[in-house]
Image 1 (cartoon, one colour):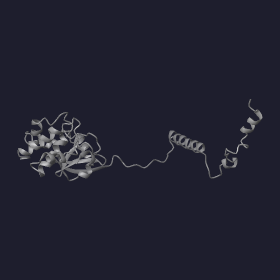
Image 2 (image 1 turned 45 degrees about the vertical axis):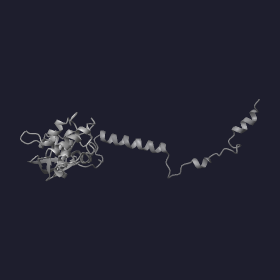
Image 3 (image 1 turned 60 degrees about the horizontal axis):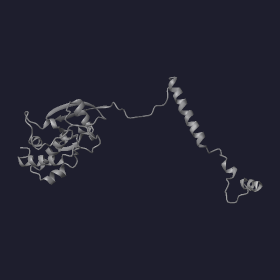
Image 4 (image 1 turned 90 degrees about the vertical axis):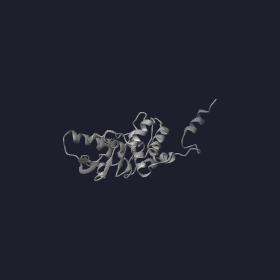
Length: 226
């Protein structure tokens, strides 16, 4: 049978040497300390007060932010046509091409420079239009997939894509075509390895890579961009 008197002594916090008890004096906050509860309660009161001020229409401080409606006038040459546009500084080149010029062949896929669906040629070089601000392209020459055909006839690389079943769902096809066009401008007769290296930044979610590579090689064998 337990010794209730001994048990009571064990429960007495002053009698157990194995337990380290905090000194009550250490738990007292000084004038420069603040408990987490006090901090949260104070923050809540401040938020409520701010909401009350706004509700009564009393002017309050506003967070400073960039003016999202700031605009800039730019000049572009798109597929051989001069374009003078007033664009918002936050618009990307892809947005301007699609929404302002109705050139919807340029696709927006990942919207973060990973898939290559938005690839266009800027001054002859392939770029991701989703990651180029339109204001950066001021004065540039832009070529999109709509600018590949001439007088209604497909370009050699477009014909080669058709012949080799290069497009599947077709979403990545414009970007693939533009990158392939840039390659053929500098290397009219690329090998399959050179095509793979050039197209590494263009993803095909249908995984139709073999047909795409074969199409670009065929375009080179048939005279490239001639």
